Image (tube, rainbow, N blue to C red; front, side, top):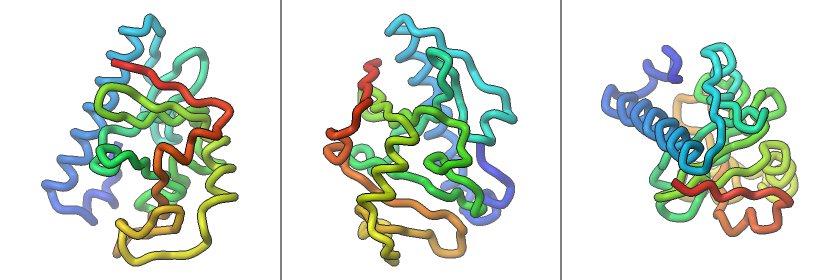
Length: 166
């Protein structure tokens, strides 16, 4: 779901691409659940604002569509959204799990475990360009978001990591 403020900050083409990436990711997540015999219940609009797209096994899941960074083996971890509110990987997010789409699977991790990892491993150093934000903090120009980039290999020490194929 993209807010009006976010729409005003982006070109129409970028907004359309972001919406399509999210919708396609959610469609693929539904498919992955179906193929793996998992019941997938869609969240309400109100729950969606709090970063829950679906419920699987009673856990709230925030789905992250297939982004260019994912094609290079990275995930984008959002601490604050474009409006400066709680991001998907924040204490205020209601998601239990974050599902990052890759070419033919979702990499699913516990939000709390990812947040704790970031608190330990991400430097409190801001960079000016997205390409420089590996384990560093980045905010896009004229926005209030805050994110970092991690490589999937960074997650190998996690206690819980689930590869859901589709």
